[in-house]
Image (cartoon, rainbow, N blue to C red; front, side, top):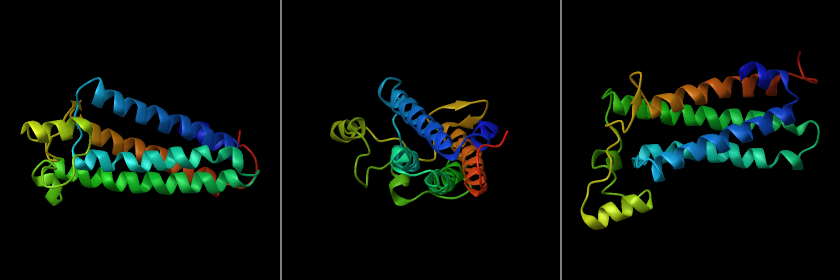
Length: 169
């Protein structure tokens, strides 16, 4: 994916990132609403940079030829922010540091983060805690995979944004 993004025209690379962000958000919401994985407050925060990438990608048809590099730079910056949030959340999961006050009580002290959390709050069921991974594969939580994906996609976005000229082959 990295080589593909760097070799594409910047506008096409931005369109590819739009598709990636849409796929990731679709998967996250499918895991939540179809798979029953209730997100903690930090999990919800991790979605915002992907929504930013999605929104920036929707601007692709509106920009001129040179605007694709600017879109990729903005997408890369959003993904760096997402990697920061995910990295913080990984630290909370690994008990390297404490989460925010909404994480300590599973979000019960703050606003519900979804309809399921609102239902759980009404039923007296505790919301998920930030320091307990909801799902893991090969010892890596969804948060860890989000961190890896954010970094792995931010780097080529920023690299392609820095390159002048047409596609590299």
